[in-house]
Length: 227
Image (cartoon, rainbow, N blue to C red; front, top):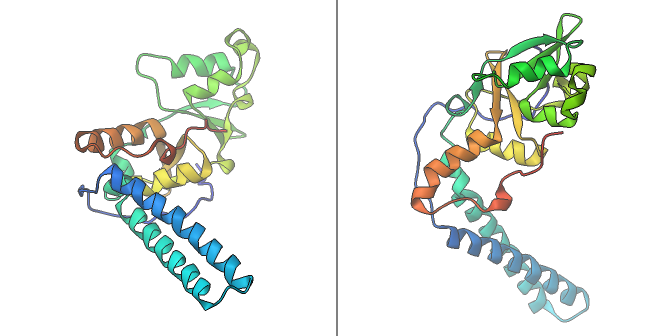
């Protein structure tokens, strides 16, 4: 399968976990960052209005406070505990293959078996054209499945982000959040080997963080369905 262009993610080797600060401190850093931005804006407005050099100092102080809070927040956010876990830990390996002219009913039979593949690769003219996961079946009402082809619900691979099995789970989570995707293609040495789902990453987060009470804030996770 041809790999789609995606954002660069660093590769790692180790698979250890490190401790982090509590959620209260993380939230406090966010508040300090916002306050710093507000102070900077007020200081700049007052200095422009001619209220003196002191206002410039206030603006600089606010900018420094906001920048420091941003750096600390990025350093200590709970997701950083996952930076040394690779996708090999959470990915869903394997896939099935169907022609683009196969019906959605045929795709559904594959994806709803007792041991279903994580995705179906849709072939067109002998080349991979897209992917289908079980959530994509919702795009067409079930009574119409026998009358629509697989390429009607597939996600074109050229429009999907991808990652390597050696990539950091934390970095892939950040990529999902930016692209608002719930799953990505996974490659090993240039070959397509499966997908990684948000649900697996979220499960790893809960497993590693729940016991210490350091779960991520809900807004740190993507919630929109993949396009």
